[in-house]
Amino acid sequence: MTVSLLLVVVCAIAAAGYLLGRSRARAASGGDTRKLHSLIGYHGQSVLLFSAVPALILMGAWLILQPMLIEGRVAGQITAADIPEGGSPALVMSDVRRIAEGLDLLGLDAGEMAALGADPAQAGARLAQAGIALGSEIRPNVLAAALDYRRIADGAGLAMTVAVIAAALAGLALSLRRITADYRARNVSERFVLVLFIASSLVAVLTTFGIVASLVVESVHFFRLYPARDFFFSLTWNPQFRGGSDLGIWPLLWGTMYVSLVALLLAVPVGLMSAIYLSEYASGRMRAMVKPAIEILAGIPTIVYGLFALVTVGPFLRDWFAQPMGLGSGSSSVMTAGLVMGIMLIPFVSSLSDDIINAVPQSLRDGSFGLGATRSETVRQVILPAALPGIVGAILLAASRAIGETMIVVMGAGAAAKLDLNPFEAMTTITVKIVSQLTGDTEFASPETLVAFALGMCLFVFTLGLNVIALYVVRKYREQYE
Image (tube, rainbow, N blue to C red; front, side, top):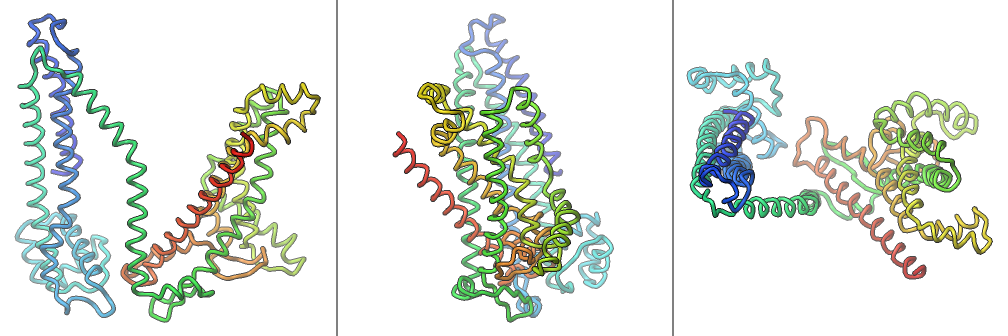
């Protein structure tokens, strides 16, 4: 039984439990539901929760642990001779999983599986016809491990189906037996809702810890294979998957900062001035038309911005600025990506700043006007200082968005990793290289692939530093203002 079908079965048992719980509660009250401690709906919810939640937890834990346990059992069949030259055990185990999945897609019976197990060449041909790409030629031990993987996985899947359905039915039976007129079903339901709220609030925290942990672990693996001194101090980025790579971060970091700076130089003034106009000068009718038009920019996919940079902005800057001034002859440049990215960031700065400025109390404006200040003086000396913490947050959000952008940089700035001050030269960013290093049929355990995690860790630390600096500035200003 597939996981999706098993999930449907559990949900059906839980729904049946809800109806049975209501009926059982009504019967326990003798037809007068006023005798119940809780409403019959709470009784139905309690049965539903005891039927579904333990079964779903069991299924989730099983799906997480099953692949690790199976791989631990079949990994012993892989010998050193089965690992290709320059490969790794992880790459061979990846082939084992792919072969097992391919055999499952082929829908072979036990006899056909045994026949394929005796002929690795035929197995490779059948898998190639099914579109299964492997990292190396199938060896007998690898094929035998894949067959065992498939056999154990089938048995484990059947055991999971039985265990999950049994858990759902056991929860249904036990919860129905607990229903009496004095049963506090409402407390059970509300306690579960409380736990759900707590778990939801922890999702963001746990996700952050998971992301950081994965980056740290893989970065440690990278620095075991590649010197940290060369990574942090080299001025050259030249990955060579056959050896002799130079993986210095500075050209990528410079490109990231350069493109982001150009984007912010356009987005921050334009976005902030539009927010001031919409909140302080525009009429209600004008605001109702202009604000949605600006916010439409935030809904345009980044690939569309990339096409706009590639087809329109890049050739325009090349023909009218770069070539006449002798600064470059290509349409891919820092200026192209920065300007288009700045247009994309305008709604982030404008909309957030507009909401923050509107949140400034009207009493501050009235007091300023009462002292004889003009509207522009009120904006400069009262409203902007009061809204500064929120505006800094809006600018920080735009900066984080610019640093993490990929598609516009790929299509607008190119992929050249170099240190240059010319804004009409092609450069690249950290995010672009993270994508390029993790795509393709490359060995995951190589430094050229693991460097993506080190780049991601540096990017995370960089953005975290921006947040700390912004928080320090905001707190310092608030102390002066208050």
